[in-house]
Length: 185
Image (cartoon, rainbow, N blue to C red):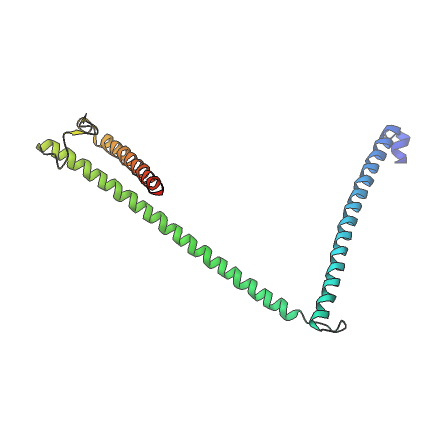
C-alpha cells in the first residue's frame, strides 16, 4: 500500500471506501454472532428442559439418576423401523404406479369402446336411411328436427354423436340430482 500511496494511486478516498467496507463486514459479522447466540440460547433452554423431564421420568420409573441407560438398542430398533417404512413406501409407490397405469389403460379402452359403439350406431343409422329402414329411430329426431345425420360426412356424424353423448350424460346427471333433491324433501 505504501507503494500505491507514494505513486498517488491509493489516497484518502480509497482508504475511506476500504474502511466503510470493513465496517460493513464487521456489522454483518456482529449480526451473525447475535443470531447464533440467540440460537444457542434457545438450544440450551431445550437441553435444560429435556434434562428436567428426564430426571422426572427417571424418578417416576424408579431408575436411579446415576445409572446409565443404553439407548443403542433403541436407536437400532428405530433405524430398523425407519428402513421398513421406507421399503413399504417404495412398495406402495410401485403399486400406485401400476394402478395408475391400469387406470389409464382401462380409460383408453373405455374411450375406444365408446367411440366404436358410436361409430357403429352412426353406421347403422346411415345404412338404415339408405335402405329405407329406421332401425328403431324415427325420421324426425331431437325434438322434431329433421334427421341431423342426413347430409353429414362420417367425421361430422362422429362429432355430432359425441356432442349428443355429452348432452345426454349431462341431462342424466341433472335428472339424478333432481331425483335426489326430490327424495330428500
